[in-house]
Length: 309
Image 1 (tube, rainbow, N blue to C red):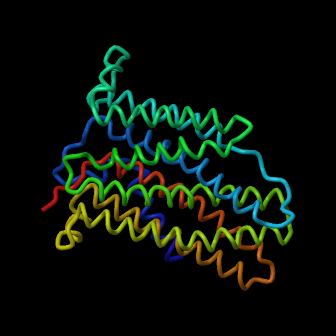
Image 2: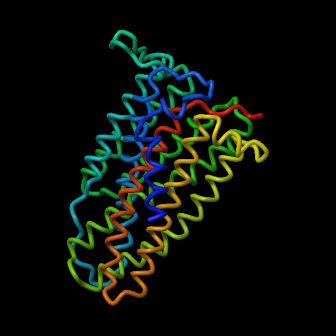
Image 3: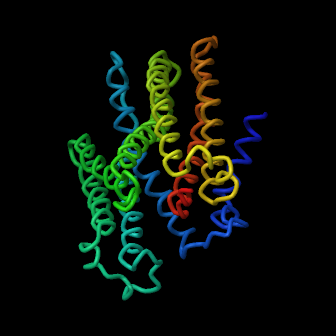
């Protein structure tokens, strides 16, 4: 119950949007923050689905005599990601403002700026991934998806930032591990549902849980390092409550703690319950909370970065 209460409280900020996060901080609300946060949420979710699916399929195929796999969602997810990336590129093409009409969009200007080139790389990456996932060799989508991850990592850390390559490296690892975790679990659960009540489903969930533990450790380590780069240790507590970025980051931490508790619960059931498949119940709840984490992450990237005091 305590974990449930914390998760609900942590979900309030991303559900209500940027206004509560900015209230009383003295920070200006950038134009179109809500729309940009929504587009980034869709983009992150669309990235996680095919990346996690590739990961889960690879795990399933390592099981001897594994049954058939569920239908792929990668083509649809990559197409949705293409639309979201296109929307974000249109924002960049208008000087990081939400365009009021197509005439405001300067497509040619995208080739003249670093942010514009990265936005185009994400658009082309999702388009190529959608085409690859619909082909006879869907595994080839891994390359364009990797290009999207690299572009997003570079976009999050402009050249004017202190040690931008270090920040991009941390974001690269963080985003990759998060995509594997967030996208892999739904596909594992879909596979278990298709396979029914058998030992193969429990074995698949067990293999995923072992890798997820490593992914969680990497996500935690890179997340802490990235936060300390933007909020020095002496100012963390103050900025967590006095800045919009800090408040949403705090909500994300609470939600990730809730996800970790659910993952631990599923792992305990998997190891000790008479029927290991009962671990699916906390795992389904984990998927729901992970969706909130993605929403928080989308909002976090749209808010102004706190001043480095």
